[in-house]
Each structure stands twice: as C-alpha cells, then as structure tokens.
Length: 143
Image (cartoon, rainbow, N blue to C red; front, side):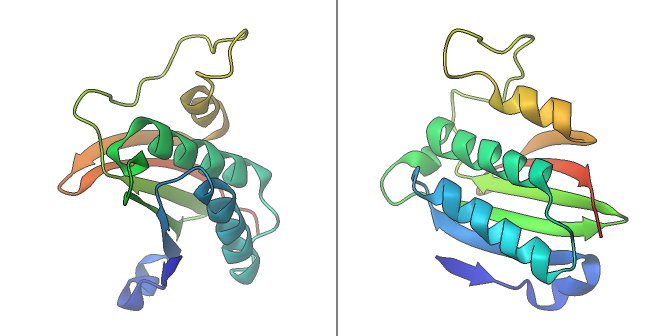
C-alpha cells in the first residue's frame, strides 16, 4: 500500500490519500486507512464516511479498468469547510459510467452503492479525468 501525505497540499485541507491495488481485498484496507486518518485528524468515528468509502472503492474495483490485473485505486480525504470530501480515483471505463438507480435491487446483491452515496452524503458527483475517473462525495465532518 502506497501512502502519500499530499506534501504542501495539507494547507488546502487534504488529510491524506492512499493508493491501493484494484482488488476486492483493498476495500477493507481503504476503510481502515480512512478510519485511522480521521482518528489522527481529530474526527470522531464517522460511520457514514466509512460506509461511503467502502461503496466507492467497491464500485471502482468492480466497474472500472482498475479491477484488472495491475490496476490501482486512489482514495483521498480532505477537510473542506466542515465537510469531509472523499474522492476515489480509478482507471475509468469506456462503456460504464456511474449510474444512480432509482430503486436499489432488493432481491439481488447489487445496485445499492451509489444509492447509498446519494442518501448519506450532502452532495456527490463524478468526472472524467486524464487518468480515468474521480467519484467524490461530501459528508459533514464531526470533531
């Protein structure tokens, strides 16, 4: 696991970021990294933020080229005016874009990720970037 502290970006509110292999085993690693990062930064245990990290990293591994052998996923967390800004960067996908389902699939195991992001975050979005795609959300920070 590669860790980056953001260097001079700390002044802009970056709490930290981590680059992980694009595999399912990275989902709990991302969650633990963010939990520890929030604790060090003085934020109370924040269940919603941890759940959203889990959902976004899972989506990145399952639905982007990051899930292929050698793929990577980056998780960045910033403190922005009392909001925790969580960004997950993946390698993108030519044929799959983030899509919010009107109703999650109650019978199956999928379709809830972005629905949960929509329900639990103050705001969220995504954008194509030169290295792939960034999906982000903001949740109120708790100190």
